[in-house]
Length: 210
Image (cartoon, rainbow, N blue to C red; front, side, top):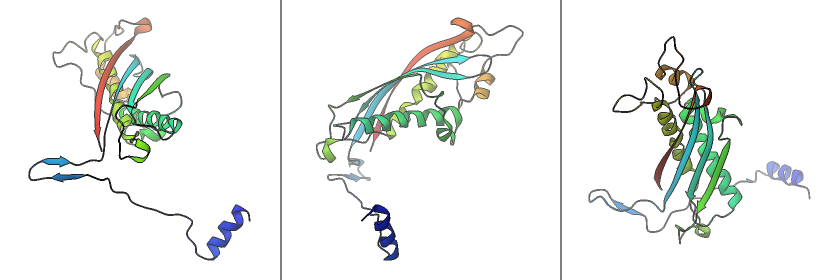
């Protein structure tokens, strides 16, 4: 019997072809009055670094390279986990650079030109499925390193990074928002890179609780 015929018969006989279920992690508890306990089944961590290039005339941001190391326990399938990590990072970039709906609008030319992802597999969860750990929400937050790289790059522009408190970059860091930070004047803004573009690296380490 072909798949189409099975679906047709199931529809005619009102048989559901999907199923749902819930799982509950063991050993999870928290006493809110004492502030003690273990509220999550796992605590996933990661670290990321980004190198960006800013066009001081258009406000365009290009992420030249991103390095991500993600705790993943024992990956159930390395290719799937790789897609989750890099996809989560790209979604985070969209939120940072374009706003709430930006993650859906990220084009292939806007993701990091050179992205290098590694897994740290020492922090395995013994009671997890296959000793694996979640690997999608943490990379989303790790994209904050792109924002910090933008902040460092702007700090190298004359007239921008002179304050003691550093550069404040609004979110989302759109091209218009970046142009608001770059000083206007008759002279072209000066950077310390080729073609008046500034490159800087910044790193951020983020822990995720689950």
